[in-house]
Image (tube, rainbow, N blue to C red; front, top):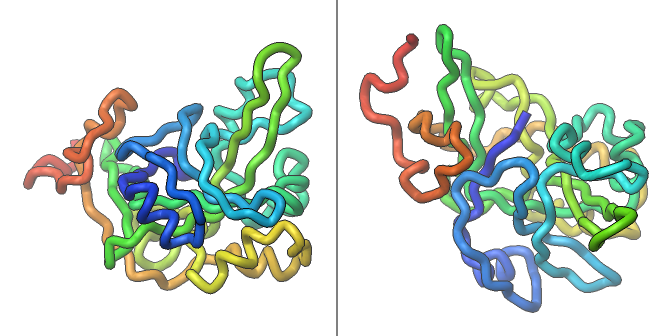
Length: 227
């Protein structure tokens, strides 16, 4: 499961990387958690844009928003057939840029958080799907779930799952709403031998109220020992 991630790049950086014409103003985020808003790249009527969507997909048929807190990840192995995700997989795919994500490794009676990011420091293009929920009262809510797959060799010692990080030449196919070849899309959702940097960080990241750049710093020596 991937439940926390980082979006510290500027809107201009993301616009240039993902071919978006208008760069939004984005504040750096270092501990995005379920139910919070995050930037996502989408193709809407042939125009690529960056929008803020709610983390945790809420299907159109849901009774209320609470279901979204349980649907933060969509497993690649079942996304094409799972009732909550299959319609979004066919027609509403997006990219969630991430300057890193967190995973937790069991250590004795506790869990050690790790920051995982691209070795070159560039934002990862995490595959995601999105939905639009229209409540009986109030404004419509657009939300997303990150697609996860088996961990690659770099991450497997820490966790058995990881978000799907697309290669630059795969982004167009994933974002294109006209692409509905199920086999071709599923082929994108695989673990890759990405050059990743895995850093043990402070357990301060466990608290969603902590959201600053200090969370990216390596944990002090001895702080990651089993307890």
